Amino acid sequence: MADRVLIIDDDARLSAMLADYLAQEGLAVSCARDGESGLQALSREPPDIVVLDLMMPGIDGLETCRRIRARHDLPILMLTAKGDETDRIVGLEMGADDYLPKPFNSRELLARIRAILRRRRAPTWAQVMRFGQLEIDEGARAVRLRGEEKPLTSYQFDLLAAFAAHAGRVLSRDQLLDLVKGAELEAFDRSIDVHISRIRAAIEDDPKRPKRILTVRGTGYVFARRQDGEG
Image (cartoon, rainbow, N blue to C red; front, side, top):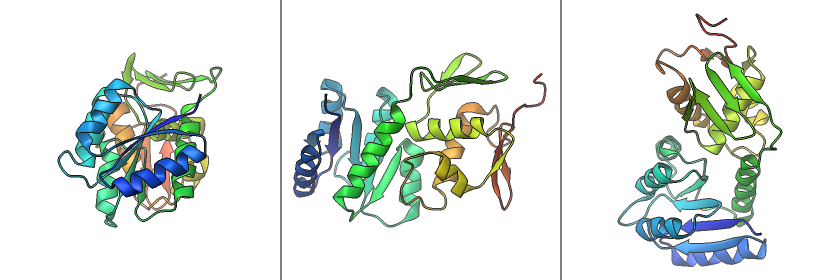
């Protein structure tokens, strides 16, 4: 069965062009002209991935992203016509898995879609990594703290799993991007920092004073094997 893509963008010409191209590449594509109709389409038949424009009339892309995240666990690739890094950071903080600034090449969009979908398909035999009361279940692609499941985007889960697999080792941003295969193809400097901030909010008791994912100034980050009080 073909992977299903929902494009939510008020640019009808661009949506039609992308739909034709992605369909030729074997994807099943549907389009919505605004956030409200996009949310309705999601409720009727959730796709495998959403391609979401940031700038739309009515419910904009950020609010649409927030509402999708509140109801559905599926990847979101955000399109933005703005070059301001702040807009991309806000999109990631709202729960987008990846971003792509306009104008872009259709082949790059396809590559990003396929990369995100590959990351969603972990093998069922994947291990469960345990660090005290934190569990990272690669098979179920779930993160649990004290038995409570914590929501992360697909990209954030893979980033956390990469950290855990290299616990105790200091990793630079470039090393992290390399470890998360199929990651953002042209990541900007702060994208990793934004994702790590979201991960900390999910797994740290006090995200402002993290004890699990530590910053190593001038170098990168390190995932602590143990926290104070753990055996």
